[in-house]
Length: 173
Image 1 (tube, rainbow, N blue to C red):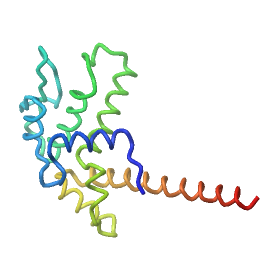
Image 2 (cartoon, rainbow, N blue to C red; image 1 turned 135 degrees about the vertical axis):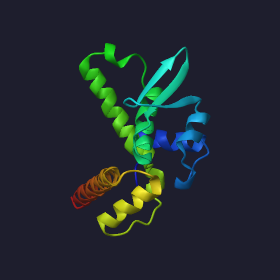
Image 3 (cartoon, one colour; image 1 turned 45 degrees about the horizontal axis):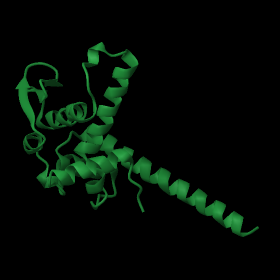
Image 4 (spheres, helix red, strand yellow; image 1 turned 180 degrees about the vertical axis):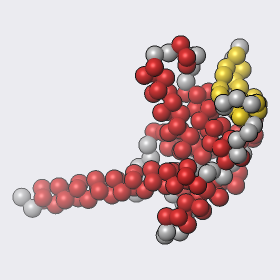
């Protein structure tokens, strides 16, 4: 049994709303169209802005295909979950939003509900390469996402064993 976090659940719902349930259906242009986000390319750092109730994601055109996908997910979080002009916000609040956007990015680019169904190679390097290729992300990104996922699964199993131990102790009294 795997317990989804609120972020994992919301991303799964978003993908299902978009009609996407497999990795080969993931396409940032299609996602942007369905969410009514204008996708633009330019020479500066990627960013998201809203003007007159219209949302734009500007991606740096010099980035690799994988980096543009990762930046798209990061900026999409700002569109979907944040409001206001970041540079007018207190530093700690801006840092919180960036942390949230990074977390969203990892989970959106490599969704848990898809990762969970995959038969991953046993060796971490092979699994990393497989995830990178399957989800169109950089290998370092794939490795970090796999580590996040494995750490959560390990933590869940650890807490489950503790709960079972406590239950056994209580029954033996």
